[in-house]
Length: 330
Ligand code: BT5
Image 1 (cartoon, rainbow, N blue to C red):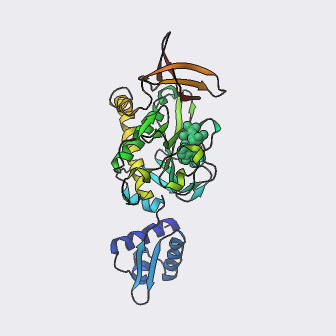
Image 2 (image 1 turned 45 degrees about the vertical axis):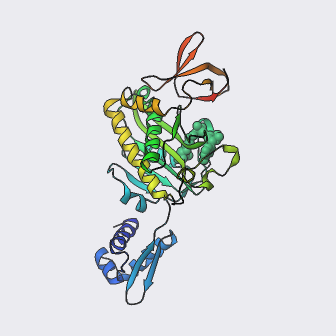
Image 3 (image 1 turned 90 degrees about the horizontal axis):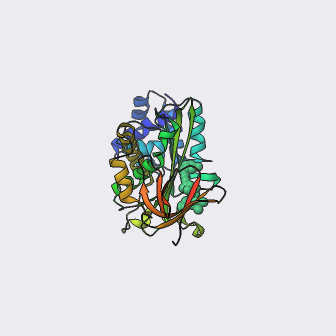
């Protein structure tokens, strides 16, 4: 048994027993290790934020679990059984970690979690502010699709985030094509970054990175026009970060399965349209160098996830790729 498995096993026993205590001897027996080894793992868990009381003659009692997207906290909340979780602390970028694992051959369903990122990335080399108080995760998928068929994936991931927001009881978030999740006041709640690699016209892996602002600290940079989940609750009930991560991963599994089996054109496209922000509004789509590709009114998204813009000359569809979208006055 690896150290992380021992910690998970200790937590499992303590969680089942709570609010009662479990003796060091019982834990040692359950794990088939020495009491000293149990003490060491308890020490590591405390460092991670678990409050574990030790009372002479009674043993260990779990009083508090950390409010962080740690695998040991997220796993028990998952309904889906397709994800294998790692990480949970501070990292550079979960997308970079997931890409490294994907290149090394990790299987479909590997997820990197983080409570903070020091080099969080958006699209086109932009930064994703990732202080503590947000949920940052990247999932490795191995779709049996061609690169062109991946077009709707950012939209599918966006749908998953809005479903998670609703499932957690925080109402309806909106989707801004291609990859942004907005609060109804037009500030950004979450971002999605999809990276992939292909060989012989078949996708070898795709990484879906999702960052969600949960606490005000995650959205505190005024320059970002960001919002956070906790502001949407309308109650003083705290939003637990493991619950947000689990709801997001469950929703991502469900939405991805729908996409893989039935495609985007149909129920998913209708759902996207029903939550789309900017439909009917005048927008300008620019490429990475700032050159305007198209300007006109948003008519919707097509069956491959492209944005359909109505211009004076007719309708044009734009693929997500390297473009940005701004609301403008027509
Ligand atoms: C995105 O890019 O929205 C994709 C963000 C993906 C972040 C996740 S976190 C887990 C995984 N690991 C990573 O390294 N990345 C992924 P884009 O559409 O390019 O938007 C970036 C822009 O959003 C920035 O230029 C800012 O204007 C704004 N922004 C940055 N941080 C933000 C935040 N925390 N909340 C709201 N807006 C933010």
